[in-house]
Image (cartoon, rainbow, N blue to C red; front, side, top):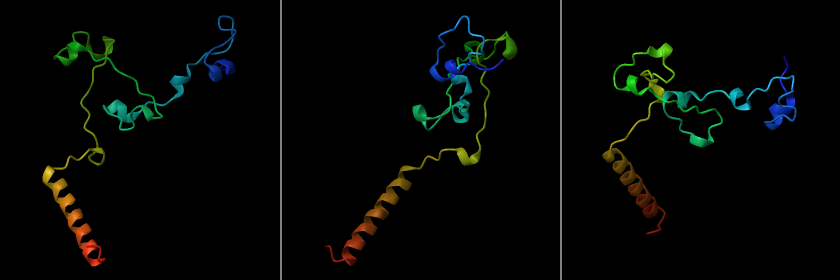
Length: 117
């Protein structure tokens, strides 16, 4: 059965109960955001992909869910180790301060060389 063109363009159909075409939710066509699936999307609300909020199973999070992953309606998250290239690197304070001091020294040296002092 073909998709309802009016519903796909406008989000509603004037013949809704009697329409003979498929009413497919436009949001379901947007691909899932892999970063959000992993736990964090750096683009946030400006991300063009779909962010689906999961409700975690409290029993699983505390240690054990008697229903199991297949029977439980809630999410049982698994620990996924990200690639080394995608990890955020946190710099130590001395690395940041050293870089700032080096930039300041270079700026002063350039000012002396250019006769601005």
